[in-house]
Length: 295
Image (cartoon, rainbow, N blue to C red; front, side, top):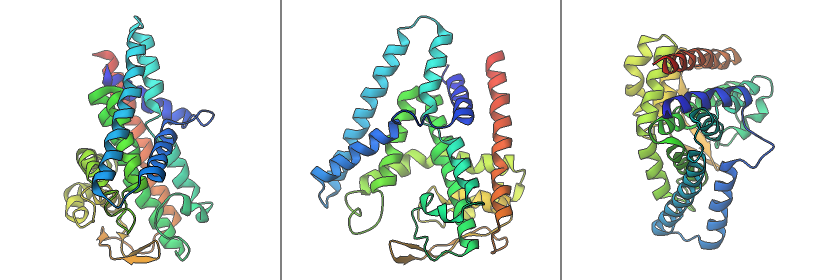
């Protein structure tokens, strides 16, 4: 049942995207993180761990209450329909695709897509940042929530989303969050370990690139994160470009390795080439859904 829900949830997000007229669950998660930080922040690993544990617990209680409510309904088809709608809020396929494609028309909007400093980016740097964000967030925003959804139902998907939201808000290595966000960052590394590798493999296979499949780990392991570099490297190798390199965050230049061995000058056409992944992934999901309905 969870597999069907995961596939249907992806299709709902793919068609409708974010339900912007409602308060999104991630917004509530972010509100709690901000409230906790405003009231209980300390430059302490323990205090950050308390934030992580309490958000996960609150998220579980909320999602499990929804699960119990839907489980009371006797019709299996209604259950799958409702679970799929709720679960679709954990997937960000349409929003990710639209946001990255928008960069080809509105390059300045890259500041909304990445956490790095964007003021002095060249056109090639902007295009590179967009592709890196797309590849990394295919794992964080699409594959990982579907992975946990199919394994553990909406409880798993929402708990993963809470972990990922924590990492995006406090998981930085700077003076404020080095200790406070360390526990969240470590939990996020663990949660994304398998999904990141699955994402890199799927990118390599669906982009029909044997070189990417055989070499994404060799490049990806150079990233500071044990996970983020893998899908980035797979995408770079698949479309024959070179991503990564030194990047400025919060006014400080960070040394970063390169991922891939293709061309350095990244063009808008390379963004569009990376985005062709979605059509192939859509077809894969459709075939899996048909197969799951037959068996």
